[in-house]
Image (cartoon, rainbow, N blue to C red; front, side, top):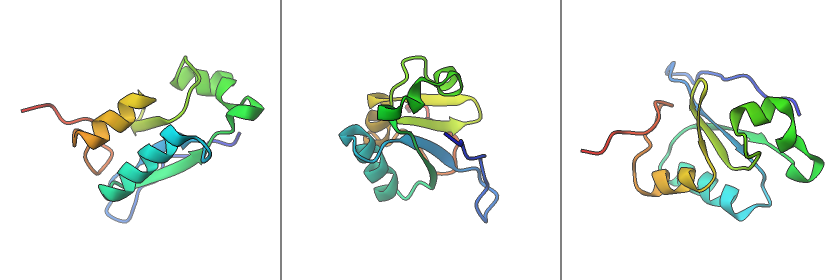
Length: 103
């Protein structure tokens, strides 16, 4: 699995990175929410059937080895259903800055 390096979009804001597998429903929900909320992200396809989520590199990001996994800042990850919950609850914002604090 070749992990892509974090890139900046034209505005200079870092994008979120979504580690996902297209065929999984939970991954689809997170991709859909990111798109609907117009939050920029890079997609890294992880084939769990080939063991790509069990590599030492991926397990360092998410010890459970599950996808979806959303990197919201360098070294800061939100795993599995928490991604979807935060997105649908409006607690993630554009620009790769991670969760907002509730008011």
